[in-house]
Amino acid sequence: MNEEIRQRKRRALNVADINGEIADSLKVRDGIMQRVRDGEITLKQGQDELAKIKRAAKRNGKLTRSQKWSGA
Image 1 (cartoon, rainbow, N blue to C red):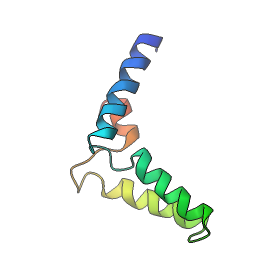
Image 2: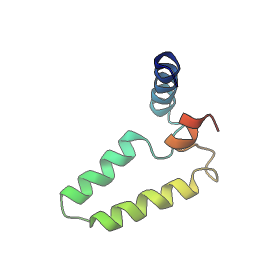
Image 3: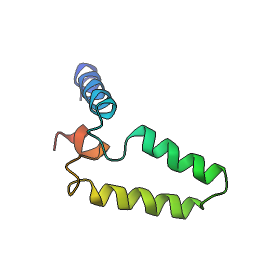
C-alpha cells in the first residue's frame, strides 16, 4: 500500500472517529485504559469490554476501526 492511500485511509478513519461512526473510537479506548490505569478494572476486563463493544458495533449501526480501515 503506498503512502498516499495510507494517508487517505487514516484521514477517513479520523473523520469517522470524530463523527461518532466508530464503535471502538480512540475516546472509548482511552476511557477503558484510564479505568485500567486507575485500578478500577484489570487489563483483561478492559480487553473483554473492548471485544464486547466491537461485537455490538454492527447492531448499533457503527463500524470498528478495523472495518473502517479495510473499507468494510
